Image (tube, rainbow, N blue to C red):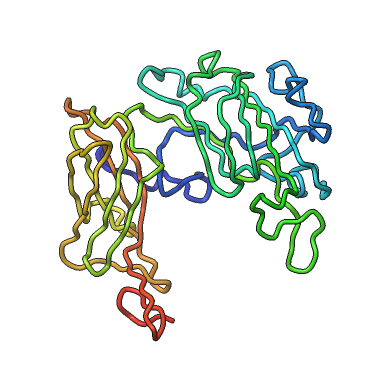
Length: 316
């Protein structure tokens, strides 16, 4: 396979944390972390976030402490929990010039409030327990990516003002046990400073127009000469582009339309055809600045008085 082909087969969609926005350099941080409850709310005063403070228990991230797989399996409510672990970047990242790249730390979800410390410094505060968040930890690295430390103070109270769905301390009827603190993947990602932003990236297929519409926000967009988008029939091992377009940058990103010529394979539950996508940023010097792989199914969903329609056909 030539170097110019995307090689979509390398994406492990069962295990990669974000398969619709794939970059190759990432490292999961799941597994054994240090852990402690903080029922007395002493952690901040006693500086549990400092590097030399060791938590007394362990937990298997990303499983909530209420679950068996966490290794704790405690169903009683605790308002505050602390997680801590050290990490070192893989050897294949050692040659990265961090002047040109950032290291992002991702959390799939932390319920409900999360304070994140890197090497003892408070680096990020997030509120909301059901959506992912991420931030750049490069400025907080002390050892060039070796033996760095992450500490998370998470708070999940019984406050009725806090959105919680059906989670309760004492489950009954339709209500179920809380899912507290870290409960989704934690992972690192290497990204170029000039890059396609995950936040605001949008792909909208249209069966009626035989097209896919893109909204592509870009960090440091002034470095980009143009954006290239390609679509590939996921069932075609030759990885020959089924459609391709390029677009100029307007402000901090671009909006693009990828038009298919001839017939297209629509997505339905019985024939779940997919198109793989490659989005690349090109610099004025002809170098690729960033590349993201994704996928989509082309279909239209419409609600009419007589029911639901899928790509113009009555479905339900």
